[in-house]
Image (cartoon, rainbow, N blue to C red; front, side, top):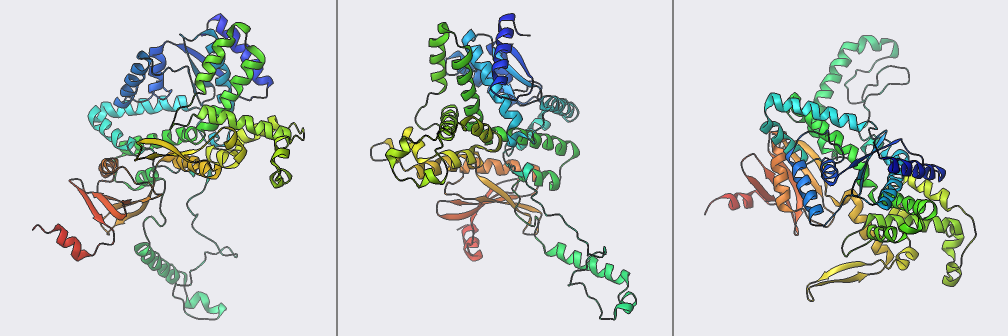
Length: 507
């Protein structure tokens, strides 16, 4: 329960948020000391999760960061119905106001953004359920065995298809003729006959037998899987030779990965939206004169930037403000885009007043990639002095590479695509006809970290139980890296067999 002064502030800010049109789940606030909030943060906001050493390491990292003044968690909020939010007891009263307003912005975003629409709104209960089941497996099979399997699963938890909840990837099989009878492929052998003799010349049993033969032939010839699979976790759950408890545990980790995925897809928008509303509510409704200096100090700290790092609070907030201003003044559409008079464009104001309506629309349907791609304009880049940079080996310092807004946008989008992580697909589940697993890295100009790739292959082999391979690019060469359970294997793709034999033959 919140103390009376914070309960009063919560009701005030809740009323202001609702009056501005924010639509949110009920929010339950908990107040914790720095040890408690670091513990909750270490568990990703879910203190009832399964036990694992990585949560302890995260707690240790957060505690040291707080102790040495390197970082401080002001709040945490969980996408759930109701939403759970955690406040730091050491915060000043003005900080608690900012945090509460910020939380209501997040909760509105969770409820209304389409990328969160497929998430489990009772994930607090689901996480507790996962924790109970995994603890039972630890009691039954041993802590070390279960934890080792969790380690292997967590090393590939990001190999999911982030758009799978919205797209039917697999084609639906089966078909019927217009007359309701099953269609017979042209490759099934049939004898010519008159229509009235067809049942005698081509009996049903004969056609069924031919269909089975054709199906068996096609099963032998077709690739497995038929098309590359981006959801590597799903493929492993369905086809790896796992025990029942392993499959269940792996499914839980996959479910949690999909729950957290929208937060990565909308980091800039989500933080920008929450910052927009805490700024609006504080400056227009509930900021006292005596709190002004503290508010300005802490708000500016939130928006602070440093070289080489994107501040999602700053970028998201400024883009939402820019969108609101543009749609209020009518700075969009064909007429505005075709105007080549820079002085006229700077004074452009059609007084449409559509800004607030537009940002609510943007909040509903966009993610970070479409948000940046659609609304990061040349004028925005010039106003905020955005540029790309590169390292100069001659001077030993980073320097401006380009100010072209198209290159700035391309750089941002490249880093946001798949969260900047490599794209990995399953391309063959019966590689070399030996039941081995072949993955392919969709190379985009940046190579894999070879030590990470090798360690990940070792964990994949634990799950697949057979040798696993990954095709990627190292330098200028296409290579295939594998692990057979004993040693790492690496070979160039397309290298002649005799050359490989020479390379493998000891001198």
